[in-house]
Length: 261
Image (tube, rainbow, N blue to C red; front, side):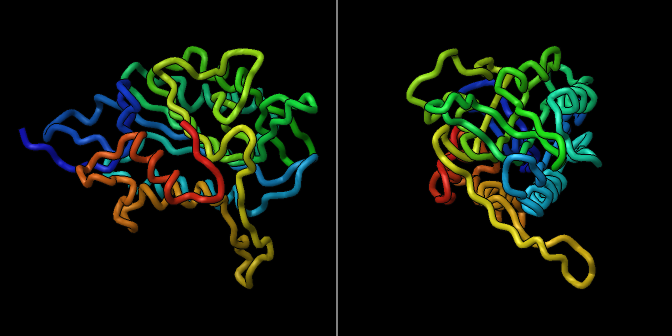
């Protein structure tokens, strides 16, 4: 049967998995797989410098990337208010992805500051904050937030030290890393000991729109899977980007830090 080129996010459960897109048999029922995305950007912090407007712009870039899929996602959601607690994030994850079934794919994207400094007793964490209240999201807490969520979970973490969430770039750890099940696929912007860089200009222009800025990893990721750039992550031009291709592309083209999977 003829295959049609289809640029929509998908991860298979074999090897490193097909990521973007998966060629579908012509006439295949669109209802076989449902895809949903939750996009979280944290700009204002209590203990760290503001990243505004970079995380906000990252969310918009990811939204545009998902919206360019030939087969629309069932849901692309980002919260109207900042997420400042693990409980808030867990509630959002279960609200957005709670209806997922075995063949579905759930995408969680987080842009924030990350922490890891074992010499000073700082365990791996991502910061959730609204600028007044700040809490740490640990790998265990993030994995637990997906308890009971069926299907494949794709986590995209853009933060300093984010590789610590999957044990990449660490010389040792007290406990085995999380997300080892076949149902999790994780890509991070940096290794456990690396910073992940961003730029920002927070002055508003005359129209009152937010200033410019982004995280370099998210910028490279969005471009690598963008129709406007010719889907450059599709390195063998077969119409199907696998996670290994995306990883290789980012390692070669994103020099600011080392992506990990």
